[in-house]
Image (cartoon, rainbow, N blue to C red; front, side, top):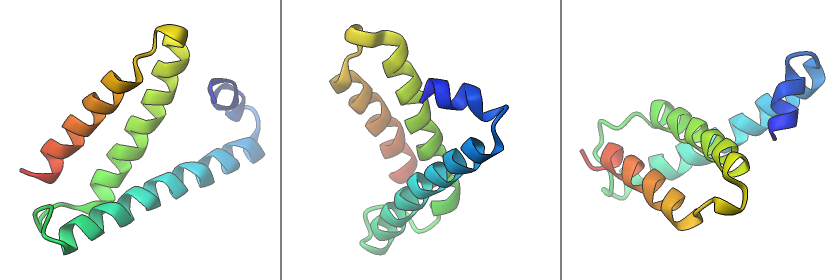
Length: 92
């Protein structure tokens, strides 16, 4: 992913592909958030578009962090950190 992100600056086709991938990830998160609001598991004032953008950006940051840490990456700690942050946004 890091190589693709670096190359995207010079390769418009690759940038478009990465944009589509990001939008798919964001769209999945928005669907999940809308469902949580519909089930009453998240407050109705939560904006699925805003929160799904944040979730997709968090995912990209987690990918970069994973690559940076290599074998020292702690998957459980990353999941707990991201889940805690999103839970705060969904249960305010």
